[in-house]
Image 1 (cartoon, one colour):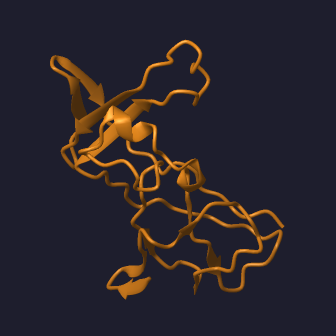
Image 2 (tube, helix red, strand yellow):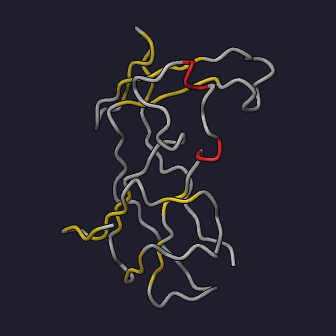
Length: 149
């Protein structure tokens, strides 16, 4: 974590794997502070733009779906109101989608692995998924929440 001109920056190596109130905040900020997160993908950085279907078999599911933070807000108490404004979401230059054997709701229907990397142009509204097939890009932050009591 470091201070930037616009606020606090949370780096990719500052994550954990649970929504747990016992996890100490990595930073306490004032109300109105700007916090920037540089987040890993859902694989926890295990998959890359050069990964293959074979890499899906070696995924460590104990590193999947990491949680960044937590960030405490000075003066905010249990039961208080918290407003988060997402000022900007930016993608990397690539993204992935996969069929992971034994994982997901349709795993019985799709037992064979598949891994597809899609090149992304930052700021673009669409990406070419397959030749001639473009998909709209709508970056999202995944999950955001407050740790339980």
